[in-house]
Length: 267
Image 1: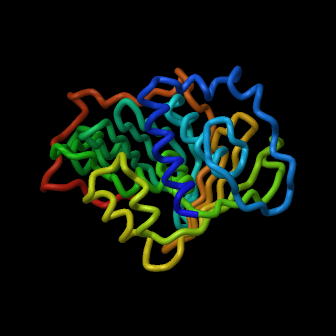
Image 2: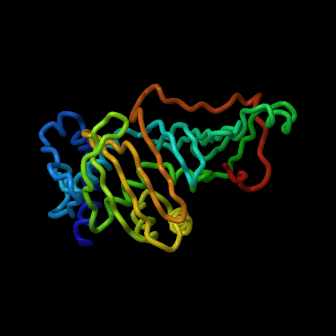
């Protein structure tokens, strides 16, 4: 079944280069018949943006994410609850606020800002934020755990995605898909990441299988993902593509320079 996964990746690249992301608009989806089975069904056939097999739907979800570029999220990462916003294009932007943690993390491309709380201001002697920038995107490990692009790319690379069935999630009817693949395959699917970051992702996932569950709405938007590997993560998404989502860098006057080559671990 490796051929369908490779076909999906090639087709996705061709579609994006040709500027046909409009296939993911409401008009494009209106002609697509809904999946009819509520039992686990292995994918068959060659995936394409109009193919409603599990492989085809995951490819469509990739195209939807390419168009959306941003979303709001709530997450439970290894037992730690958090919320914020994530932009994956045209540049990486993250806002992350862990429950029970007064500090906030913001990443804007290659700069990270950590703080925003009274304790940080006391430690820094006035400024509420500390800035870290070393020319690379910081906190890539955290971003890759939260990113819907990373999860859907891995799912589309799996040999045998399954449609588990239709379910109700937050009063919305969704389709639940599941894939199981090794950490190396999961990381190798991330062609948008550099080799060092793919290797870090593979290491973080651990030596066993990665079980990835995805819940998609009737527009092929990812509503929830659950990834069980070295840690169990659950991320819920909303406000895809919303122009109301915004993450702004703190004022320079309220920012102190970071120390050391890398920002501290967070959370």
